[in-house]
Image (cartoon, rainbow, N blue to C red):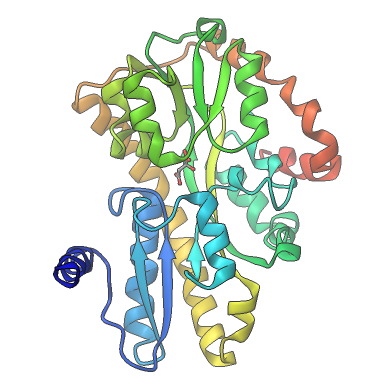
Length: 328
Ligand code: LMR
């Protein structure tokens, strides 16, 4: 029967991270698109749920839905406003419909390492940007770093011109499109859950992502290799609806925000370790990783630099300047 089927599906998902919510507890549903474990975001979401369920027992109850099982990153933004979920963490590249300021995070070679990203996001500009989509009803609670991005493709990529004529999957970001076009390649925006299939069937020839996504989604299995370009950050906004947050009892809101803040710091401190491990996991599983010589690296930087001026007006020169100086 349909009831039995529903019960089976429910029981299956209960095995992962579905908490037993008691009557009267505020239910916090968190939907995301990556692997449940072994990934900076998957692990951060689990840690957040574990802490909420332990420390806020009887007041709140959190359930995590990983792997695009509930929504993709476009749909989850609507679901937040409808109150179907209360938390999400889409990448900053996916906020173009709500703010153009986050384009600063997408500029190629903007942040040379996580420390620069952390310095910018914990500084005054970063804090201000948590509310960049407030007019649309969203409130950012923190930035979750995920790593630097690498290119993978069906043919060896050593310099950008090797990508001539190829098609790359990108996130829903015009900065990414401009970057791919600067390489003489074409870009196609696709939801994350579509990427593996698109690579496998040849709908696209390549993609760009972190070691953790390339490993946990098995992209390396359907690509020739991965080029270690470190060309852009992948980071998320832990985001909720303002209406939901404002509607929480004061003590519940304060406790929840404190836990979210602590989890953000703990999770961000673990990213480097997870990324290094997943890079090695790819190699151990037979994936090819191509390191760049300084001369090859320079060709990537030079090819992508013109992208900056295209988006300067949207972002604001002051913001770009602050982000650049976080590398010092
Ligand atoms: C992507 O769409 O490639 C990433 O934003 C997925 C993710 O959440 O890491």
